[in-house]
Length: 466
Image (cartoon, rainbow, N blue to C red):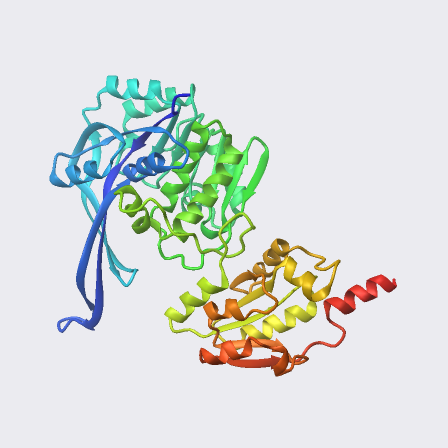
């Protein structure tokens, strides 16, 4: 079978990051002095969306239609678009550039220059030919004027009547053409269009579907996920929170590109929205644009596992080890506890809430199903390890969970190295072989009182009597 063909139409630019250190203030103003040591740049805007489509695990051929300036920055941008065919429209001004000044990964300042990028000399033949061949059209609007051009709008309106058209809007851009298969505003964009600062995102999506005469609208809401309005039915695609969510640049492009690829492979709005919500979450969790650059330029073919909160068994987990590593790196205090946590109950909650107050982060290590059976006997656990893990991760006081298969957690604590190891006061020192591991790495063991009558064994015994 041939690969599907995606055409991305929109405003292309350069994303540039200047990385440095700031250890002093300027003598002539109370501002930090950044000593730059690394400059990295890559295609941005619609060019980034096209590149993400090209690197999606589901294969597709990709063409970018965008105004392209005639300058060195445009040459740099085109060089970075490996594997993407480009149809260049006329471009007013120099190439638009967004430069972020970063210190230890944190954005300190952004400088925008160049542009405006408004198209001119639009060759209707090249535009129509590319759109006629498309299986899916993605409009990536960055407010430079492409979606205001009457010739481009007419071509997009015609395309929307014959193939799925995905529209990623911008506050300064043109309204989506009628009949778009899916429009993907973020919360701020949705509220700006409707002048509505109060409604829930699912209501915004439904209202915008009517305003834009779209087949469906998916309002993206950051770590909350996405809210889809299609026909008269709403769908919520929740995602789990990212542990370190600083690298959000490009997440919206990731969402829109994932939707376009999903449509190109025959998926509808609901499946595409769920897929895109997780792809956008993983974009942030894996390090955002800086991490994607390493894939796009061939430096690596494997991104790191996403570090998120509250995943199912088939996804990457916020393991206790990785959470502890991050907290220790930031100078924080890691508290850990462990156990079977079968039939989560009030006694567990009391212990976990008290333990969380002892430090900056709480991680939990839990016995695997096999380990529980060896300790408790046949018939236990009542709840499987994957469900026990999910329930613990759903608690606001728990930052990470990891499963161990041994009879005690000594081996896993060699990696976690908690500053505090918490157990119930029914345990004696001889009952805790892991205590030696904790102390060897500079940690302390702290015992907490149990709530009388609140244990899984007692609860199960009460059920059996009834």
